[in-house]
Length: 542
Image (cartoon, rainbow, N blue to C red; front, side, top):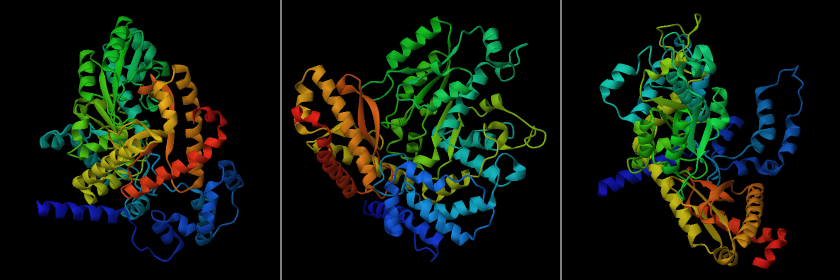
């Protein structure tokens, strides 16, 4: 037992080190590389004041559309970027930046990114990527294995098959979701007899051939907006992305889903896909994926899981059971640039059936020819950088147990913060974390009592005032520049589903300490007391 604890402690110390940039060369770029993850404010000095400028003020630095006629020294240009760009950028790596799904990056990412950019490989075609193509196929195999856990022989057969693909890398969850539904649509409305398939003949002829009066995509009310983009682009129509209400835990209501499935079927509208959410963007909750898989099977439709945020949790043996049923999905979206600590632009989609992507296969005589192992033949995007290399390296350098420690700590930290909020007399926890997201708001103790005992009309009036107060606190905290939380508006079960403005926190940065969380809550308390004076309507309730 002692040796296990010692190993865990060593791993924890190692992970802390890889998120702290070591000494860098004494150059402008070198110092930026070091300070960008530690003390950007201290490095920039007076320049940091500029970060509080309104966006319109910052736009004044970038309003000249004239093309430069004279070359500039790199050193001079770096100083220009420092003054105009770096000093006014969002310090997403700060341990007190806990408002969005963007976190600190391991220090080694900077070196790896230089290597990736320097090689400048284009993953559309083996002729422009060579070793990067099999590497990307291997990473897709590793991520497929993470989700589906097939036998080794499965990956030996399919991983490097020229006419098949286990998935695709893309710029993010939006393109991954579009790809998933594109594949589902083309497989549903495939070539049949004289009909050449929806890809060639379009939806109108497809509906005539198959006798459908429309297609529908079903997802919870917490589903990501990219699904409506997908429906728009695929000709299905945004209104045919049907949002199913959620329960008190922000998970899709399966009974209401079944009712909608029956209703659509009776109207001769074919259900294209049921989409499960594994880590909702606003609250971090996970749908009952096993139940959704059963319903998809019952109605013989595609089952896709949007796990852009929560999918990486599968790397944690402790919390993997939260995603039970994901292995039954036809396709799964995961964003490596979220919980896997890779820079922006690293999303991916994996398919249970390696033959599924043949429904979107495309070729060109000059580049992605039939029979070649070009990854571009099964992707929506053409030219792409070698982001798979960064995922490959992170998986090796951090390792699965390292990721597990990061995820476990994030979830435990979120639960600690939730308890902190619960114990504070002037805060109200709105959604308790399932992963590492939570929502809450500032509600003075005296106001909480009225909310519990007052009439529905009183509650409605108070909630309108609390929405205004939440917005003021969040904006002032952002402007202060010490810390950052985001805000969103969600249906609160305790207020009969009324839309409520709340603070939203994402605890993904391993350098965010409990002390920082205490300070953030204290800062919000102070801002709230100052801000209430801006809302004199509160006087009758305080």
